[in-house]
Structure formats: C-alpha cells, structure tokens
Image (cartoon, rainbow, N blue to C red):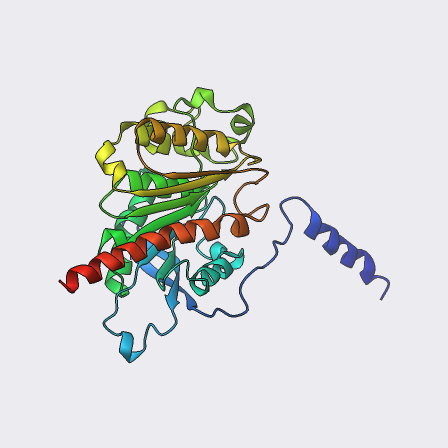
Length: 317
C-alpha cells in the first residue's frame, strides 16, 4: 500500500500544475426552463461537421406550442473553449435564472463552436465568420421554430466570441437586432498601439497566426470591432441594440479597447450600453457569470418583449 503513495502524490501535484488544473464544473443539476442537448450540422464554410449546443424551452414539443416561434440567441465562446463551455461554467444556471426572474422570455439559445483560436475570422479555407453568420444561422432557422425577424434574434459572446459577435452584428445589421458581449477582444486601431502586456500575449492568443507576424494592418482593421464601428454606416449601427462590458482588472487589458469602442459610438451618436466593471476580471474569472450575464440577458429580453408587443399590436389592428 505504501508503494502507491508516491504515485498518488504525483497525481495530486499534477492536477495543481499551471495548465493542468481541473476547472470547477458549474453545470446545473436541473434546469427549470430549458433542456440542453449537443448536436451537429454540416458546414460548407469549414468543410466539416461541426458540433453545437442547443437549449430549448421546456414545453417546446408540446402540442399547444406546435405553431409557436421563439426568439433566438446565438452565443459565441472564447478562445480555447467550445460550445459546451457555457453549460459547464455557470452560464446555463444564469440563463435559466433569467427566465425564472422574468428578465428573458422563453427562447432558443444556441451555443456555437467556432474553433479553438479562430477569432471568428474568414481566412483561406476556414471561413469561421461564415460558419456563424451563414451556415449555423441557416441550420438553426431550418431546424427549430425560431422567429425569422431580426428584432427577435440576438448574438452574444465572451472574449474572442465577443469580438466575433460585435463584428458580425456590425457588418450584417440585417441578421440580428441586438448584440450583447463581455470581455470582448476589442483592440486599438493600430496594432502598434497595443498595450505592452497584450503584446506579450499576442502569440499565445493566436493573433500572429490569424493576422501575421508582424501583424498586418489591413486584416487587423477588417476584423477589429473598433475599426468596423468607425467605418460602418451610422444608420446601420443605430438599428442595433448594443451592450458590452469589461472588467477594470481584465488580465489582457481589454477594458481599454472596449473603452475606445464606447468613445467611438458616443462620438457617432450611436445609442449603446457600456459597463466598466470595477475590479472585474476577464471572461469566466472573478464571478463573470454573476456580475454580467443577468444584465445582458435583461438587455436582450427587453428587445424581445418590445418586438413581441409591437407584433401583437399590429395583429389586433
């Protein structure tokens, strides 16, 4: 029995090493308002089958709901994550609670899989933005009873996924009525102006793989939400409901870029909601899901309810 102790000790130490730590599983034991399943679909954009997660409202298959169409939210994950991370890191608990609290109406919530470090950018034969804006959206609208109206569709995301969600919303204003994101990878207009700490992480974040080394300005500015907001038609931006937040202690310094986005939208007189969370960290760290998701779900929920009231008002005229 003693001979096993060193081996057991080695296993214990290994679980505590940097990069080897087991993340705490925050999956819900039970959801009151949703069921969750992992699915797959064929994507021409990346030439393979891709997984995704889907939360369906309870009662979705009941006979009395067979003609009901639900609002749609698409969630984009962060770097090194996948479609299942939202479920296991506490997002599902907050989503379920938002419906219970009346902040969000019953909806179809889809968690995309955008690759480990794609930045949701189209490049070569891997068109990651098209995976979301074309293939996944087409699959979801053909497979589930979701509303076809843009004011009943929102795109959300965190970190790398926040960057992708902002870009897709800003460049495809007819697809979604709202964008709500957290700890988004929003950068200075010129890559030479990146904060020193962020430059240190450039290779680890995959920026050189996506944008080159040194970073090429043209693809950088084409992908950067700040540059897109500066160049987009004001009328298109004003059609969107825009929410974004970042923590003042974000380890990548993303609060700086998000602050620049806030200044840009202010200057262009585009209505939006920006929250700098004092003491907040990056992404799922530092109670992210508790400090941010209730706000963004309520923000999106207000659009869904407003659109639903207008639709019912037209039907009763």
